[in-house]
Image 1 (cartoon, rainbow, N blue to C red):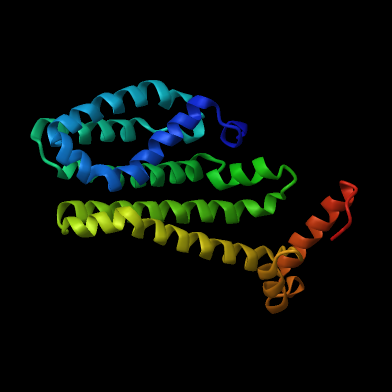
Image 2 (spheres, one colour; image 1 turned 135 degrees about the vertical axis):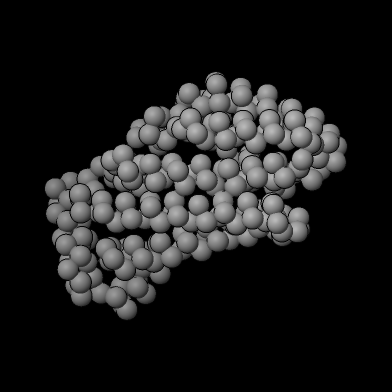
Length: 236
């Protein structure tokens, strides 16, 4: 978990490569295809992808590394574009990113400690074990969203107008993810009901949804009070 919170330069490079495929590729693909053509661009991507998977991919912690299926799928897409000259294979790259993330999130739930559990306990080692079920459900939910995004992107790449693919991959997919992040934040607040007085929205939620009204709210706040006392801090 420490590797995720304090990444090495190689791990940062791996993250940058993934972000480039997710953020930059949808915005730059039209210009790149016009400048180099599908085949030459795909050949370049084959080389870059192979080097990234062979060198940078090894830097990722085992729990968040790409699986063999994901690596083969990426190479398969760029090789198919290079061999056929068909742009649709390049349009499927953002779908590959989303599906790889979905598999990563679901694999972490299946194999033991979910990604959100690792993050939560890495940030706060004194977090109670009773938050684990929520973290696992949230991780699985995000995996479902990534899979849904992958399906929509793939459908638009194969069947939809190119303008729709550009709009969804360029900004709409991030709007959907921001909306889920907001819903997840509110759901987490209403479930655990840990509020901070210096945050205006927390004060509003505390007034509407008091902590003492639910068993989990009372349990979470009692644990918070005990931990603060144990650390020599004021109880609230």
